[in-house]
Length: 190
Image 1 (spheres, rainbow, N blue to C red):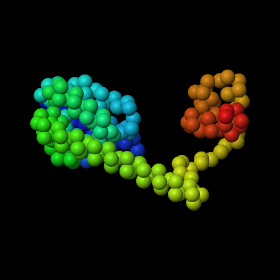
Image 2: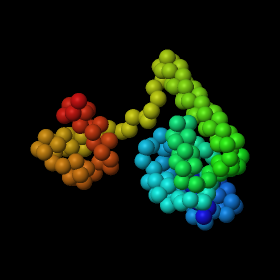
Image 3: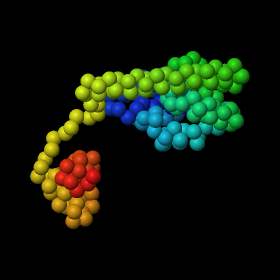
């Protein structure tokens, strides 16, 4: 059987459409998809897919970095596939025949290059943040509005020992992170 796997980061503006189109064009019998960061250790759909793969099956991905962010993880997956008689095709990096020694070697080289690419992007991002901080700019989300009435009410309820869900419901605060921010501003939490 041919299985496909498509993944994008959990960011709202990313879609799976391009990957799904490519996987359908390759004739995948079943496609697993998820919106989750590549850095996340828990990828439920990938885990489900890996549990379904059997000898002779082919796993098709748009790009090797959809499966993993590190060469070590990719090489480990490849070794597992080889042991179980499963083949892997990556559309973006070229189609690999992982049943041959040359295919395995090419796979390992490309996975190392992909890992290096991710590390370079990470370093550039960190350098950019450092340069921005040196100019007095801070990264991250902009600070939201502060509602003193809700904040005081939340602090009172928190001190009484009410549950977080009750406090959110009673005050109309939309998220736990906002609630904790309010509690810190009120001096209830550090």
